[in-house]
Length: 329
Image (tube, rainbow, N blue to C red; front, side, top):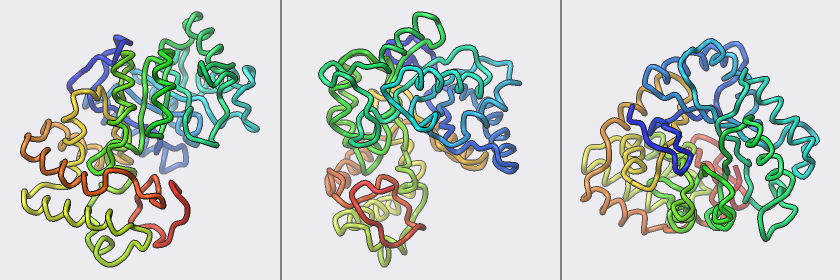
């Protein structure tokens, strides 16, 4: 697996890393997680991303990596634990970090991120919104000085509110989710440029748009998915037609599109099992897309340059036909 330097951290990470949101400790989930992590390590994917807010992901990952001797880079996030969660209570935040260390069987966290520092109404992190500071940044500075964490980061999902937080220069790595993929590119407007301005590492999550690009959904695009806007429906039809024209699988096209952006350091692979992981790695290893294909994909993206108001963050064609509210999950 190709290694890259993650922004100003100096960390050498695999270009394709492992998102651990789907790791779990139920009987089937723990065994699936074990197989998935071990196969990822065989591919050289020794960077794993998780979070306190990802159910029991930290525990499931910790149960596996405690017995792996090779170096593993771990990123986790503050947010949602313990309950009731108090984002401006430094003791609450410190307890969350202590729990992460215990569950992950680690003495040090490589990258500690603030989860959803930007999404309105999610968490009230900042005591001073002009400087983006508060108990969370005080704790991160303290933990960095002690060596409990190596680097700090942000894990965000907005297209414009995240930019100013990045430009504060306080955070070493930015994971941007839901907003950079074949058909969704809002992060390219301000989030990724802000990272480049301050030297922060760029991690692109959701390259398959949380389900929207994991396969072909021709029937739903043509006849179902009542929540799908007319412009997005026509865009999907155009994408599918072009993929038929060039004979390319949608997963391959989606992953290679993100690989083609030189401003993205690392891509989070959200495979749920070994089969998906191997499929994603095979697509990734084909490398960046040719310029002529990227140009045609640019034209298709331009059909819907911004997310329609009622469109959910995660596109699940096999889920309910009716969804309500902007950005619903």
